[in-house]
Image (cartoon, rainbow, N blue to C red; front, side, top):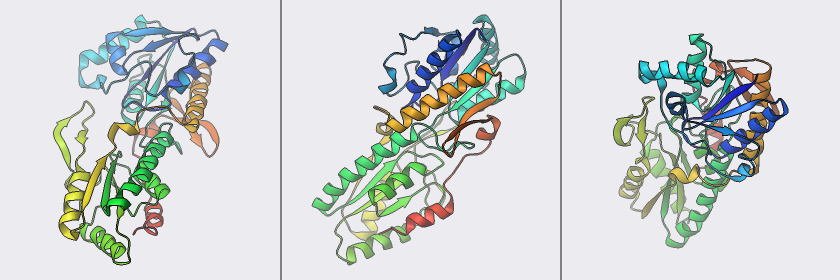
Length: 344
């Protein structure tokens, strides 16, 4: 190994810079040159790169986002783009590529490895949603749930002061990990996730019973991808991204309207949105990202291509990338039943 590339794709995530820093520091021990590919797969299509040195990654572990930039570009959408990926990988004289991303980014990595056209890829799992299989946790998740929990703690006091119901919409397209962790940690009164259809009658009954016993306020946490029993996903627009995903958002507003209509309790909604992605990563995410980055570089040196770093228990291990991208890791119904113990 003489020269490797690294890219960060998909949604930005606290801890990405910790991974980049760890890869560069570990590569320096092996005298391997690291090329940063800007803006995810788009950077490999456009051959938009920057050399990464010890100086260029100094001090970035505390920063959120990614110094390389990111995009949701899918090279499999256009044949010419896919061709450029292979050509630029060769022109850049890369011996390997470290792809840091979630289901979509690693899904592309998995497909590229199957092409068997000389691209050697190692993966690093990243998503604030924590919905990737084959790893217990992804970095970015801990920061997201801490941001959401702090916001919920703050909303408790204003909800209590004004005797209101507060509906808080958090991220989570197909999995309710952020909702259930932040909801449990903050003592929220109802938690609604994509894995379980929303029963408005049940939600309103819980809130009415809570008010009947003297509680004048309530907190309802809902994941952005949650659906009502009718099965309609609430979206801001029907446009799809390069990976076929609709833009989610709006479930909190409609839920708040329905709750107020049915219960007659004053209800407000707060959408946390990209606040959950931004800012300084927690210590846990910095350390996990660092461990993932070091492991990824070790996999490169061992030529274990098609594998990714994974957290199993307290250990960092390698697992096949295809194990992570076939299906999503969603909230187990037993965990949700545990959460329901505290509803109301």
